[in-house]
Image (tube, rainbow, N blue to C red; front, top):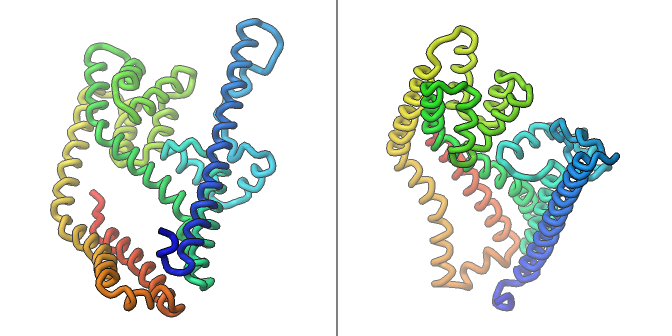
Amino acid sequence: MIDRLPAGYGPAILIFVAVGLGVLSLALMWEWWRDRRQRKEVAQRLESMASGAPGPDPFGDLFRDTKLSEVTWMEPLMARLPHTRDLQHLLEQADVPWRVGTFFLLTVGASIAMGLAGFVVGRLWIIGIAAAAFGASLPYIYVKRRKTKRLEAFEEHFPEAIDLLGRAIRAGHAFSTGLQMVGEESPEPLAGEFRRVFEEQKFGLAIEDSLLALADRIDLVDMRIFVTALMIQREVGGNLAEILDKISYTIRERFTIQRQVRVYTAQGRFTGYLLAVLPIGVGFLIFLLNQEYMMILFQDPTGRLMMTVAVLLQIVGFFVIRKIIHIEV
């Protein structure tokens, strides 16, 4: 299969696969070692607490771990880089078990792999730089996609969780008990977030601070409405169950409007997908009909440069069309 590819494509594919798999293996091994060490520390701490024998401080990890990297020498480096705390917050929002150090390792590895593959194929530095920039963006795109999927799953079941909380309050349960019920009976990721709020306030954190932290982790307009309404109710009073019912109704109405907007913008989305796929499909058909005609684009340096510019413009155009049809509700 590799022998039938144009000159340079076989080594490029091998370089990309080798570097990419090597970096991924290192990252996975590092995460496995970190998880194994944490489990061992927890087991030792529990054994020392049960036996009463001197050992590691059982309250050493009482506060939340805010390290940016498990590697000691990388911690100062990560701390000096701009927006590292924002990146760590993004990883937490996406529920990705990485630290900034692991994310940085994956970014550098993907950039090197794509850059070398692009340079071997194109024989031009500009193509290698463009490919390296694209490879560096892949981990970030993955994390952002994970965050979007998680927020969509949260938003889908959020009204049912609010209804459950309202029913618990009507039944005479305390607000904290209602949070516990939501954490036990709701699907993930909603259950984990509400369970965390319940545990935080159970261990002494003010409920207002727990709710604000929840709104910070779940970057949704619906969540900000929910937290704001609860904060106001705790300040001025009122029927909490009735307030929760109105919040649930408002969120469901927003869902209805969002679906209507998606129907109205369906033609624009289809146009964007068509314009993105059409050049690729036409180029593939021409390649099948006249292979020598299309190979000029891959063999001539000017043709490779034109292909690189065309791909970049296609990507930019696709995202511009998505931005135009994306309407905030």
